[in-house]
Image 1: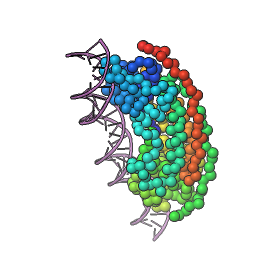
Image 2: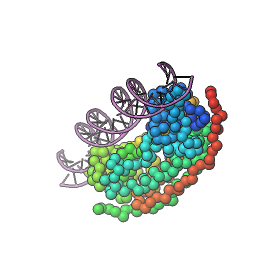
Image 3: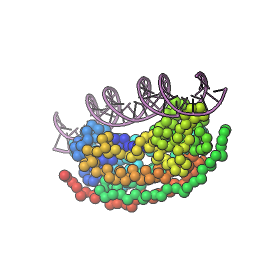
Image 4: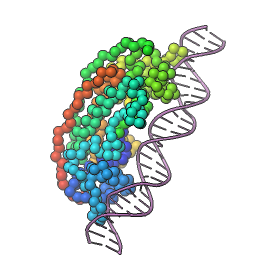
Length: 157
Length: 157
DNA sequence: CCAAAGGGGACTAAAATGGTCCTATATGAT
DNA sequence: ATCATATAGGACCATTTTAGTCCCCTTTGG
């Protein structure tokens, strides 16, 4: 998986929709209709995006939402983080911020690096990319140098 | 987030541990002790990894698990997929394989591309990388060409 | 003053997750 | 043979997360 939650998916759809007509304010009901999504859920998602500073809201009649900044300055990672919180593959298997397994787990460092690479990738994808129909060209980054395993160095311990 | 589940995290720890002493068979209890994880959970995880063909098990006394193939031939994506199922950021917000929103959502294609890039990244990280202490050097892939937004092209529709 | 918006929560139902346990089977050693 | 040690394969449960709904409040334009 590594799957996005539904709400995050919705958020991307919503943001893209707004990005395609950035001059107008968009209401929750308009977006819900257009995207065939339940109205209350769209409302909730919009609130989250606004609270995280990706959208600016205007109340009252003729209210609605507009992008807080140009679509090229909004990263996919911003949208994901707005809904799901900070991006990271591991919390090191323990919630408390500091992981008690850190000594024994032995993979934390390298997971963190992988995580970072994904974050960088997601930082490079902007809302403008998502909103356009043209396929984005992602640089198919070439893996890593090969490694030799320490092999049987450690039998007992 | 984009977070790995705890079990996946465990799986990585377990696989790394086995990879560091690949000649011997490792039992669930040995691994549980070493990694400070609950025994039944380690057992469950091992079963999953074996069923997915990443480990080979041997029953009976002197039984245990060994890698099904060399650590350099096991990708991080294999481990993740073994526990969480196929990697992908979206199921297009609907479970059934075919997404009814595909026409209106407008972001599916590009999400798929991003997803693919992450998968490629994860394919390039091997168990050997994870198991070693040395930091893996991930190519900090450079993002994408910039795009111009279609801008206000579409007012109503 | 009213209707149309968003703001902020509380709440609920359903699903995923983590974890445990039990019984069966295979295997090596005594 | 029998026993101790392992995995195999589920069933099961508790907890958390997630998605979705609803209600009451405030803002704003007509």
